[in-house]
Length: 418
Ligand SMILES: C[S@@+](CC[C@H](N)C(=O)[O-])C[C@H]1O[C@@H](n2cnc3c(N)ncnc32)[C@H](O)[C@@H]1O
Image (cartoon, rainbow, N blue to C red; front, side, top):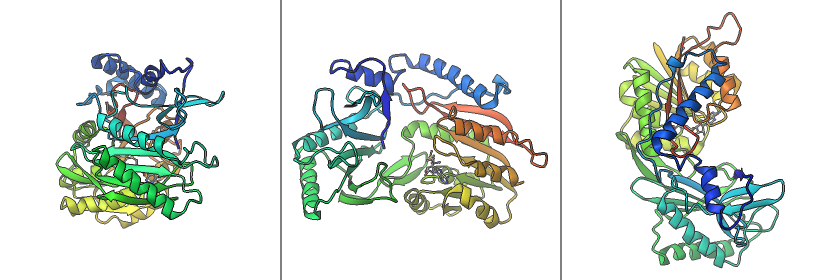
C-alpha cells in the first residue's frame, strides 16, 4: 500500500521535484539549527496534546540532533504510476489528489534524505521496466504486472532490493524469464545487488504472510554494524531508517533507563532485537515480543551472531501474548519495560495488561508519531484509568531524538514510573 501526498498547487512537469521536496522534506530549506528549534516547539505541542496540558515543560528534555543530515534513509519503497511527463511507468512517491483523479509518481531524484545509491538502483530498474512489454499495475484489477521496488541498504553500501509484481495468470516460465533478464540488466549496468528478491503479490499491502517472496540473486540478508553489535536484516523486517541516529536513540534510552544487572528487560515490539541485544550486558536478562515472524527470526539469529545468551524472544501479538509472558517470568525483581510500537500505538488491552501487572513500575514508551490519536489514548490510559485499585503511572520525562532531519518527524522516548 502506498501513501498519496495530497497537494494544493497544481503539479506540473516543472514544479514536480520542488513539490515533492516540500511534501517529503518540508524543513529541508532551513538550516539544521532552525529545524531543531521548530521541532522543539512541535515537541511542546505534542506533549500538551498527550498530557492535556498537565505536564510541566521542565520535564521535556532537549531534542538530540541526528549525527547525519543527508542521505540517511536505508529503506525506500517506490511505486509505479503515471509520470507528469506522461510516462506510464514512472516509479517514485505518489503526489496529487485522489479526489480529482490526478495522482502521479514523482521520482525521488531531488530528495536529500534519499541515498544516491538508492536513486541509481531505481533509475536502472525503471529503465528496465520501461523497456519491458509487461504493463504497470496501478490497481489490483487493471491487468498490470509491475508494482513496486523496495530498496534497502546498510552503511557499507550492500544493496537489498525487492521487486513487487502482480503475477496474474502468467506462467512461471514467463515470470522466470523476466527475473533472468532483470538480473542481467543490473549486471550490464554495473549495479551490484547484494540480495535481490521477487515478491509475487496479489494484495494491496504485500506482506510476508499473504504472498511469496523469493531470493533470485545473491545473499538472503544484509547485515548492519550497530553500536557494538552486528544485526542481520531480512527483506521485510523492521529496522530504523536512520542508523546513526537510531544509535543515539539507544544511547539516550540507556542513560534514562539506568539499568541494573538485576533487571529484566521486557522488549515489547522488539523487531530484530536491537534494544535487547544492545542492552544485554547491562541487565540480567530480557524477553522480547514481536508479531512479525521475519523480524523475530532475525532477532534469534542476532543473538547467536553476537554471542548473547540472556535474551529470549517470543512470537505473537502483544495483546495476545503478554499474559503468558508474565507467567513465564521467573525470579523477577525489577522489570523495565520498553514499548516501541508502530505509529498507531498498541491495542488498549496491552495498556491494561501493563497497568494490571504490579511488577511493571518503570516503562519507556517510544513513539515515532506521538501526536497520533491512538498513541495519545495509550498515554492517557497509562496516566490514569479512573479505577481506584490500579495505580497509574507518572510521566518523569520526555526525551525527543531527531531521527528524520528535514521532515516534521522525530522519535519520542516517554519515561513513565509509578
Ligand atoms: C517501530 S518498530 C520497532 C522495532 C524495534 N523496537 C526497533 O527499534 O528496531 C515496531 C515493531 O512492532 C511490531 N508490532 C507492532 N504491533 C505489534 C503487536 N501488536 N504485537 C507485537 N508486535 C507488534 C512490528 O512488527 C514492528 O517490528
